[in-house]
Length: 104
Image (tube, rainbow, N blue to C red):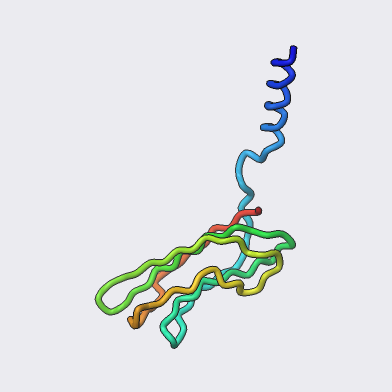
């Protein structure tokens, strides 16, 4: 009887968990500063924290570079910096980028 109760409790706990994280909208930017830094920033329009992953892909003389960053963005944050990276002195031009955010 105790074993049945434990199994039932475990199944109920699993049922209470979401099957997957809820994807949410946000805005982001991948920008290069005149000082040679890549800044990845996210604006969270929601009243709850979100987890975001930003990917930025750049061209520079002689090649291409990519940088990624994943962090929690606070509720209602505006242009919260996720990561700041150096270009190493190269002139970076944004080629493309993408972002995924999920409710925390």
